[in-house]
Length: 284
Image 1: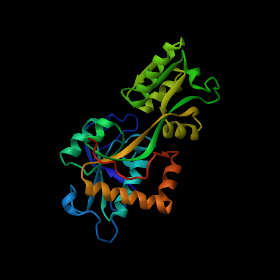
Image 2: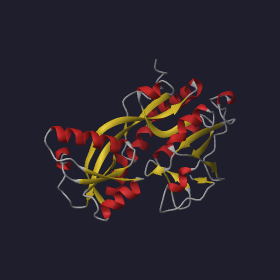
Image 3: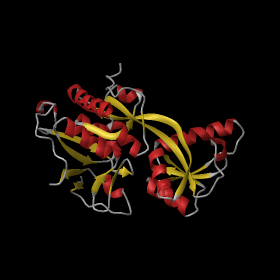
């Protein structure tokens, strides 16, 4: 099962994804089953179609391979949800800054990019927490110098700029300083590929990412996932229309009941967020 982007992706940089690109289904892609759509056309951007915004810059959660085909946990999850709703899945690749405005302007039905659940977002979005995003620390294979959080004190680390990991590491530096420990030196990069390139090149002593990314590199035998499960926070599917949110939630609960949800999450080393896969109503 593949989804092919209408734009050309490079293998060396994810920056080509900074402009919004519609992703069309190929003839071999999963199509909606021969059944009646479970969400009425009046609630959808396109008839009988579940249009989803994603950011394919985070392997193994969502990424484009060398041919431009979209892959990853989030991509597979969206395809399965659409299938169960008897809708055709359609992805639009875009940057995070455009996701909520695009949802509000009816460019897509759902943001499928693991947006963190916050009180501010809950005031404007219907959110379905489903994945627990936690931070990992990776070291070079065989390096056993980091076995607990305090071992990070005084070390040079790489992480992605402007992300959750950067914020948590800066908060940890404040804690280290208050406790009289040496602060970490943070080298910031545009994406996790370059975060790990810095570790590979010896520019840093450890790389900070999220659990699925660190696990993928460890499974490849490239690095060691020295610490994991740090500062877990729920990531969500985000929507605006209650009819769409209710349908997506129902599909997720069906996946949970038949075991396919857990199987998919486990295959990527991702833990389910707390909750029963219901959508959270708008906060006051």
